Image 1 (cartoon, rainbow, N blue to C red):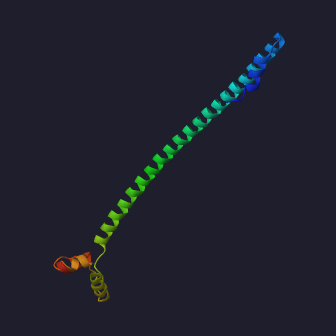
Image 2: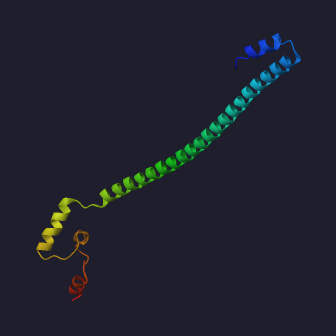
Length: 132
């Protein structure tokens, strides 16, 4: 609050009409200046509030986007985990691979799956030999 004691004192001690008018004008100008400063500060505060609200909205949007990205990453990680589990179920036993390698080195062209089913031909050549 501005100090208007001087203007009030001048108004109270004015004796002539010109002094009274002058003190009233000075008091009115000082009050007007204070009101204009208050209005300017209020406008500045409103602008600051509007800017803060825009930033809050931007942060909320970014937060939503970040959550969507996190959810997607979680889904991808779950898919990778599932594929790793499936891949570990598909990888053949090392012993079976060694047996297959030894069979190939011995000239056997049948796949390991068919070796377990020895009664069935594993290639067209084997099928023809059995008919033959």
